[in-house]
Length: 445
Image (cartoon, rainbow, N blue to C red; front, side, top):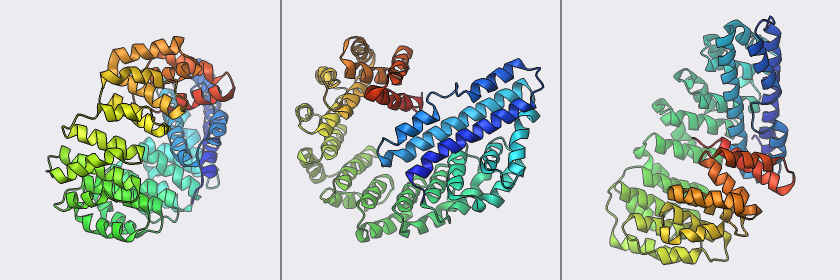
């Protein structure tokens, strides 16, 4: 199975591919198109990327291992999108041959180190030969190259890629199978339903979780019995929690009764997911009994912060809006995650009477609490943005950087400039600024 180090190494491999492409494209130029040549030079110098690969790999080495995959995938797709834009630009300004020929040459050399990446790029530009070659050669690539191929094709989805993704369901690497499942479910490929259901009994947690998500996305209500059986037989609480979420989405007469029993589960993730699943049922106008609502209310005093927050939010949605005091109590907890959950609820429910607490929490000792408080302020529209602007200019160093991040999420160019400046300062603040810049870069506008 691909590990974090191999995934991180793919950023360097992709950067090498970009360099190889840009150099080859420059050599195709006849010297008469200064505009394109200047753009390629900028591309080579990395001017089109907010954070260098070197900085990114250093950053990835310091974050929790569980967060590495998502960061690598996001950055690979950003790099790929930049390449696609560059190819489209050159094709419009110069000639298709000058930009596609380097990729075709890479694809045609069986031992070229960037063959699969060139093939994948050409597939995204609708080259039939590249699509056919990829279907034939996919299983011959190294596992990390199979993985990155699917990561990029999933983002640039086209029905012609279906055979590659179906084939990848049988791959021996769980990371490859996971990406294939996610691609097929997002594209609503019904023909993949049966092979995905068969993966529920796979030995890999990664694959099983992806299969459950796919069954939900594909609306496979006829799989409820299989999911119930899996819930009873598995010892994996993450899988159990995922099944509970699935019962909240899929239609079935037995789903509410099942979810009610899960409110008493020993695992906090299962309890929290059961609450949210019941909220989803309520939002779909499924009747929830007074007894079940009372059991959800009792979980406001649960020992887990997420269960508390989900209980309060769900009750609020159901019309029980007398929880402001419970939320305020959370803000003064010794547990940083409980304080964060309280801040989240203030923003989510737009509790103007508690808004002042968010400003105080932007100076909290906990990074996660500061971050949540700043983001929650955005929920209050212009008044929240004005508070963030004031903190960005007059708060302490922690408040300034976290307020710049939240303001940057709202497309405040001055805030983004402040983060860029801090990212070059060195030390812990610089690392935080880089992390926040990366979050802003991948947040949909």
